[in-house]
Structure formats: C-alpha cells, structure tokens
Image 1 (cartoon, helix red, strand yellow):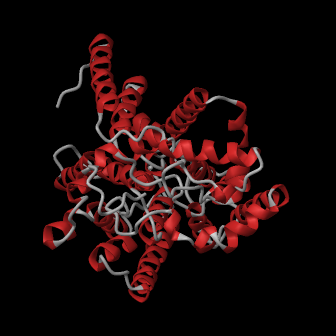
Image 2: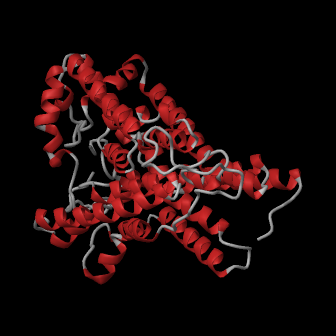
Length: 446
C-alpha cells in the first residue's frame, strides 16, 4: 500500500479514517453504556451518604465494587459532579492515557522510520481506538488505560536512564487494582531493587491511607470481598480470557480444578521469569514489561476482555521487531508484520463472542479462548531483541546485575523498540438476552 505524500492527501486520508472509526464506535453493538463507571459512581455516592463501600450493588444486579479501598478513596471526587460530568471526565482521562501510551509506543519508531509525526500518530490513534479492549475500556468507563499508562511511565523511566524515579507509578497502580502488582515482581526479578522498593512502599502507604480513611472498608475488602468471586461474575463466561477461564469453560457446569489451575500458573510464571530476565539482560525493557503484562492476563483468575489492554505492549514489540528485521522484502520482516497484523485484527474482531452461549466442542475450545491463545503465543514467542548496543544512537546498556538503580536499556526516546506499545461480568448463563444488549463484566472485576 502506498501512503499519500502530500499534506493535503494525508489530511484527507486521516479525516476519512477518523470519520469511519467514529461512525463505527458510535454504532458498535457491544457498547457498554458506562456500566462500570456507574458502579464506581454509585459506590462512592453510597459511601458518602453513610453506606459501606462493599455493601453497594447496582440496582437489579449482583455487581458491586471489588477494587481495593484505596481506589474508592481516590474516586471520591466524583461525588462533586453529576453523572454526565463524570462520563465526560472519564472520557478525557482515557483520552489522555491513550495519548501517553501512543507516544511512548510510537515516537521512537516514527523517528527511526522517518515518517511524518502528525500523520503517523493520527493513523495510529485511529487504529488504537478500534481495538476491542480499548473500546470496551472506554465504553465501560473502566480504568485499564489509566493503569497501563502508569505502569508504562515506569517502563519509560527505567529505559531512559531515570531509574531513580521509577517504581512509584507501579505502586500507585497496584494500590488501585491488584493486577499491576505483578510488575513489582518484574522489578524484583530483574534486580531493580530501588524501583521495587519504591513500588512496594508506595502500594503499602496508599493501602494504609485507605485503612485510615475507611477502617471498616479495608477490613471487609482484605478479609471478605477480595475472596468473593460471586461479586465478579461467572468464571466460565466467555469474556474471561484467562487460564482460569479456559478451565472453567471446560469444566462447566462444574467447577474448575484449583490444582490444575495452580500448576498451570506455576508453569506460566516459570516461562515468564526466564523470558523476562533474558529480555532485560538484552536491554529490551519494553519486551520485559510486555511479557509481564501477558503473564498477568494469563494467571489472573479473571481477565475480562477489557483487561487485555495489557497485551498492547507486546503487539508494539512485535511490530517493532518486524520493522527492524531487514529490508521490505525480507521474509522474516513480512512474517513478523503479518503476525502483528493478524493479532491486531483478532483483537478488533470480538471473535470470542461467537461462542458466548456455547463454548463446547473443538471449535468452542479454540474460538471461545482465542485471546488466551494469543496471550500464550506471545508469551512463548515474542521476538527477542538485543538492544545492548543499539545501532540507532542509543548508548550501550549495563547489565541489571551491575546496577540496581539504572535501567538496563538505552533511552526510550532514542530506540523505538523500547517503546511500550505501538499505537495495551458475567451474564447469567441461562439468560436469553444476547450479549450485545447487556453489559459484559462489571466494574467489580478485582
């Protein structure tokens, strides 16, 4: 495909692409009507009026707030605005997070390839908005993009020689929701002791602040609500694209084996540890973070489709590896970029919903778990890039074992491969309502 070279041609292409994307997003049948934002808003309003955080349920449902109490504390300002204003604020925050993610993902690649910056970012923004995890996050009013931006901020700090400031954003994200705590494990695994200490202390201090603000809410969460999976939804629901979700669909209507799940988690963690350490030792910080995001999605008991924004850094690494692999006609380059294009198309397709009512049989096993297989494939085969002596102006990288406070890769702004990503419920089984007319997972997704 030949892209237009004139400013006018590019402007017309961007305008047409943006209009098509906007029309699709406005009419997509799986729009979620800000359901999770409604859970947040209803919870803090109920709490302000004297209720208990984890007693609140959305009227007519069993969905309630299942994030740690610190998340409720920082959401309290929503009580100062009306519902339409809360929706607007959610949109603006997600837009800001998406812009940061795209910049960190694509800036160095755009510069290295010699592309027009405004044109490349405009096209990348349109493509980014079409991804199902992204559009679900936005239409649910979810926090996934904000958490991803926080985590990738630390990835940028580590990879750009600013390791002394790294870790605090990961800690904050882990205090808001448990999933990002896996990245503290990555910092420990790669011997970023200072950053790991900063992340852990930030998470602990935020949790203690929540304990001071709401002692009862903290007690209920850590002793009861955290372990109550009924508040989250059915593990077998097709939106649960984790290892646990695969087992739950195979075992339905029974319960999945906890032993099999635990053994699978141990294997996944072993693969992650080996690959992440190798990526870090090779100076590929973004690949290390990408592998950690993939692992978080696979080992979490519940990974709703909108949580899969954590796959986006891996997609960016795959694209960058393809662009680095020789000239335009190089077979490896074509293969990597083809895989990246296929994964992107799958993540835009909502394909798993074809098996939302019946995930039995071979086709159900393969199709209903499609995003799990993508996550697993990327964890096993994400291309390794040795960036210790980058050819595009980056400085040589120290081994993580030689420096606990410095990142092991060169400036993120100097090497495209270290940009984190290219552009990162349950209905009752017997319900006859089609998935397009009801929310998928709720905000109470832990």
